[in-house]
Length: 466
Ligand SMILES: Cc1cc2nc3c(=O)[nH]c(=O)nc-3n(C[C@H](O)[C@H](O)[C@H](O)COP(=O)(O)OP(=O)(O)OC[C@H]3O[C@@H](n4cnc5c(N)ncnc54)[C@H](O)[C@@H]3O)c2cc1C
Image 1 (tube, rainbow, N blue to C red):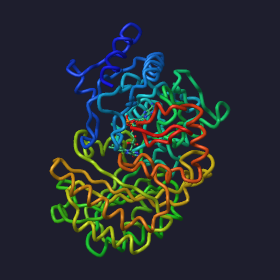
Image 2 (cartoon, protein in one colour):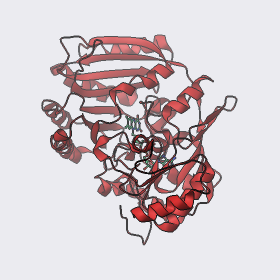
Image 3 (cartoon, protein in one colour):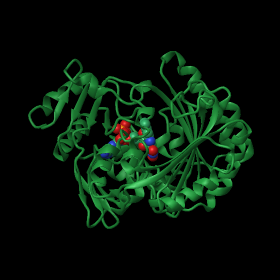
Image 4 (cartoon, rainbow, N blue to C red):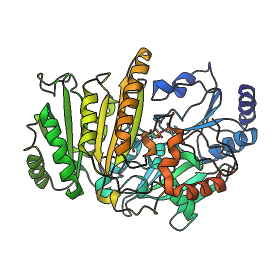
């Protein structure tokens, strides 16, 4: 494989406008590093494309030579799919240009954009695109997998807000997909991940918003259970403007957190209100009347501050492992399993994240996107986050054990954005009743499974291989 990639590099030299980086060259190590240190690999070539024509050139040449190929946007794949051992990485990091059409509330974002690239361009026009919560995440992977964040209940998932995709398919051709062109591909790209080709441009739907109300607080002991019960009763009837996220974790050692809470098992609450601030304050006060929260904060924030406030909490280069699932209803037994596991949490940054979807995202019909059914609105993400390789086994085991206990009460299904690299057996579950439809689209646009470093949907008649 290494020799074939070297030949590919030599072949590309005459026509490729971007950068071709090989091991040992200046900038290679930096370009090859991905966010999750657990899944680090050393590719034999990184082809950092300058434009769509470069993407076409490299896809055609690599597909013809049968070279194992990864696609990299922000490098945040929890599973590590944006790199590979001794293969090729198609790197989109030079393709981060965004143009905003303020009048039509649309943006054209190149395929390598980070969330920060989109937020900074759209906020200049007082507009937002609903995406994730950490600005150094790649928009490419996030949107293609579905995409949830602070504004999901207000404006829908990220994939619900793409009007048009421009894609380089496995044969190197450019294909456009929208509600009126290549409609099956348009359906598949909204939740089907990187299975169908390299998206070089997203046309995004935008909304006016420049500031939000954000409130936070921490509960301990039996108040945790009381708040969880209140949350699961309250959220199904909550206004779309409210996103109320919860996290079971050890309270961080930070100045903003009361000294008496630091290091203790807590329920950390984050409430985001994206409507009228006065109305939001009333709702937050009502919610905080339950569970005696400590360390309460309520602030009106510029949207860009909201989008970057968690950046330092999830740095590049640490070790991460995750498992995720949906519940139609959150039962007491599942809550008890989470609380019991909190007592043995293996590291200070490991957490059990709880979110409620619904709102605008919940009103999209199951058949409209490959992301599919949104009728199980409670989401649980188990995220282990640690620094040293010697803690790999204990951290992974903690996630797996808790997931095993929660699994029987979950509704089959998973958001591919929060899957690890050892969950290929859950890809079918992610698309379950939509499986034949997504396989048909894959078989049409990528019949040889050239784009297979992803939560892979194998085409008909081609065995999946890594
Ligand atoms: C710190 C952090 C915060 C996160 N927060 C959220 C969140 O709030 N909401 C949420 O929904 N998810 C979130 N995620 C999960 C995230 O959406 C996925 O990990 C996603 O794959 C990251 O996208 P990326 O472009 O950075 O990934 P990369 O690692 O660059 O790529 C991952 C895969 O996406 C595909 N891909 C990426 N770009 C393209 C493209 N232009 N064309 C074709 N295929 C492409 C490829 O298959 C590639 O293998 C978060 C992840 C991290 C690490």
